[in-house]
Amino acid sequence: MINLLLAVLFSTGWFIIFRYFRTFKVDTFPAVVVNYWVCILTGLLTFGWENTIGRFETASAWSVYAFGLGILFISTFYLTAYSAQTIGVTLTSVSAKISLVLTVFANIFILKSASKIFDIFNYLGIFLAIVAIVLSSIQPKTNENQEQKAVWWLPLLIFLLTATVDITVNSINAIFVKPEQSALFSILTFGSAAVVGFVILSVQLILKQRKIGMKEFLGGVALGIPNFFSLFYLLKALENFKNDGAFLFPIFNIAIILASSTCAVILFKEKLSKLNLLGLAIAILSIFLIAYQEIIKL
Image (tube, rainbow, N blue to C red):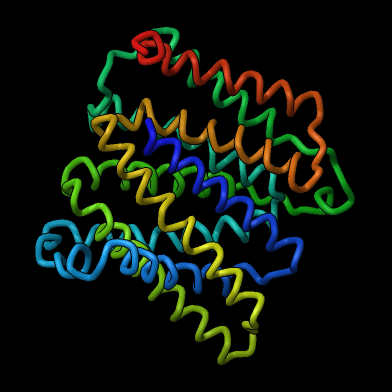
């Protein structure tokens, strides 16, 4: 449970830093590319060369999957950023988070990694999690989001890509990665994303389509540390719960919504509507229904 809480904590920190990007007008993509290189450095400094890259030979069976996941990481992020600008933050956020439906059913029926038999209360909890995500994401209309374009395929693609990332992380961790290889897996995944991002950014800089300044560099440094540990502790949490993504991912997503909403109110003085508050209340109920068997054991 501690690893799950740490994963939520670092993921929430990741959200807060992204929110400050808007405040300080940081160009997101260059900062994200810097962030991936900082992720690699954070892993090496924390766990040492011998415990990470020094064990690369032991990763031969799954390193290619880690590299592919890294490409998925940055592709999903880039498309999510484009989607937020094109169809709006709300629809993009909902499309990404309700992907947990595919993740849950992939774990139950394909990976068969669910550690318990899901009953009607668990399924009700998953349904309420989706309701909570939608309600907590609803924002009042403004001139800015009224002008967003309607591109029907973007929400669908965000939904599919986000689910693919979660399912891939869960599958690789369950089938290939040993507990002592979690740091190496994180570094290789972020390393792949860093290389792809560097190539794209270099082309954009050469063509003068983008600029990178001190704000982007510092933003990437601040983002990289919690980003590395959010993935690392998510892998550890999956190990703790026997890679039961059907149980873990709904709780992980809802917990981030609760934590990030609380931080948005406290740090940024954001106001929550009655629908938002109702969504957060339903989120708490959904967590109980999904995890009530484990809660009763405590």
